[in-house]
Length: 273
Ligand SMILES: Cc1ncc(C[n+]2csc(CCOP(=O)(O)OP(=O)(O)O)c2C)c(N)n1
Ligand code: SF4
Image (cartoon, rainbow, N blue to C red; front, top):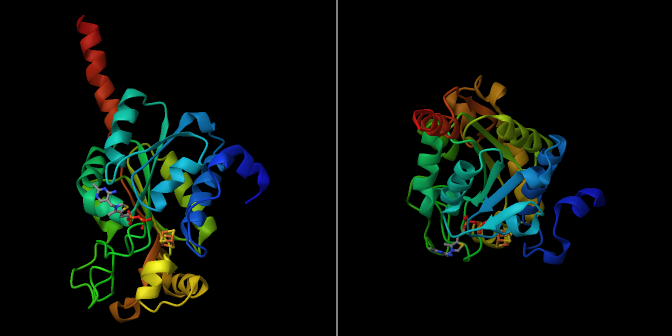
């Protein structure tokens, strides 16, 4: 990352970061910083809120208004901040466990309300921070410390979940397609409503090691070889889609945004008084 971006957006006194060599979380964090910078948003007009996990540590490194909250609750905190100060650009940083296990209900309801928050899920298919337990996005059959014989649960498609719950911008990117990920986060920030970006990332230390995925480079190569852009993906047969996953912009909706609807109620009372 250019030193100008590091100087401007990172709290150098909080570095070095805790991430393992080869962890993909730094690439996602860089994409968020680049998106804010490209959009020309003043960092003091941004509020970054995270839960708990390796990914959620990112909020502490960034020199915006930041809150490192409790496991699964980042969206609940972010909702309160956004309602109190609708002018702020709210960005939530969360892991797949944080967002879709303990925080699953908050995710569903933030999407349902279409509140103007951009959520970036660092999906490494595992609970990294606590040692590689399986999460709701661990593929069926894959191993975790809590699934030593293979996970028998069906894994969530987080983008389908966000879309069904009411998000008005949904996209999936990877740490390999880093420039595309920056653009996706930019689009998410620009969308006036709930934006959901699933960033597929890597945990070589736990998920990779437990599932014989090779080293960090092998895991990135896997993302490169199996990701197909949505325009090409839609033309494939079901057989051709097997083993691949779709990336790109997956959904856009057009609904009233929550803080604006809330403001209308406040305004109607002030007229009465
Ligand atoms: C209420 C509560 N339950 C459990 C934990 C333990 N815990 C901390 S981080 C974490 C999982 C984080 O996984 P994920 O959100 O996928 O992020 P990653 O570490 O993989 O980036 C868990 C279970 C906690 N801190 N608080
Ligand atoms: S444990 Fe996994 S997710 Fe956590 S820093 Fe290490 S590689 Fe990244």
